Image (cartoon, rainbow, N blue to C red; front, side, top):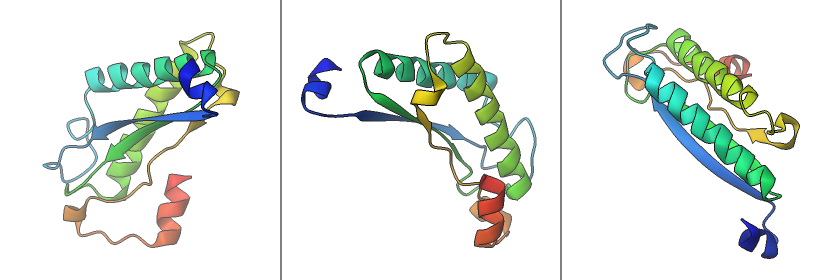
Length: 130
């Protein structure tokens, strides 16, 4: 980290992908990322953020939910994204030395799976993502 600071780097980003099952046709626990994937990847992102802060870098962490070609509509994407973000908040809270005010979280856009047949208006995607 110190080598990067010496080169005037001020932030660092890490992305973790959470895939939603392409075989699901709606919101369900089967479609969501597994508990093991949620726990491990969000804990790793939080640890990365802490390491960055200790080195004087601003961490940007990106817990990204991908629905891809799945049959999930917007509701399934909202549920999966909300679950990932809840786990992310929990993992951040479990790092007592991590300052959430000195980091950025870059969430995914809430989109339907391409196999769902749902066409979401940009305004709807924006509202659900926020």
